[in-house]
Image (cartoon, rainbow, N blue to C red; front, side, top):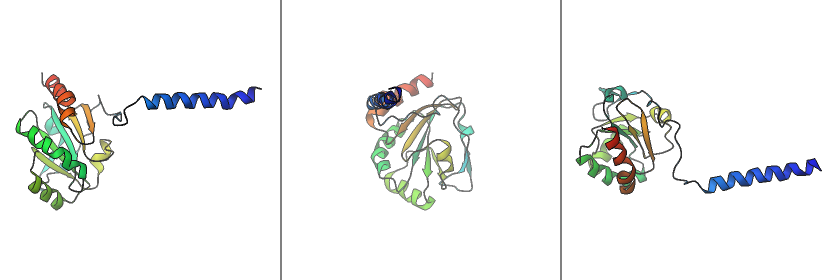
Length: 174
C-alpha cells in the first residue's frame, strides 16, 4: 500500500513544480550576479587595440555594459534605441563586442552608428562567461560601487528603458 503512494507523491510534486513554472515570465531569467560585484576584467579597446579598458575604471560611476556582436540579429533591434538613449548622455555606455572579429565589429558600428562611449573586444567570450551571458544582446546596469543592479536579457526595448532601466538609473545616481 505504501509503495503505491510513492508514484502519487512524485506526481503531486511534479504538478506543483509545473504550476510554479507556468506562473513565471520566460523572458525573466534570474541572474545570480544581481546585487553582487561585477566581475573584474581588462580588455583591449575595439577602436584602439593597443589600449586597455578595465571595469575598475568605472568605479564611482553608474554605467551600462551592453553585450553585442556584428553577427547578432537581435542587436539590430535594440541599436536604434541605444543610439537615441546615448544622445541623452545620461550615463556611460560600454559596449562588449562578444565573440566577434574586431574588423566586423568596427564595420558594424560604422554602418549603424556607435552609441558607446567605448567598446572592448571579448573575442573568446571569457568576459561574457564571467557575466553569465546567455546570448547577445544582454545589458547590465552597474552602480557606482561596481555592483550589478539590473540585467536585461535580449534587446533593450523602449518599454524596458522607460519602465525599468531609467528609474533605476535615477535612483542609483542620487
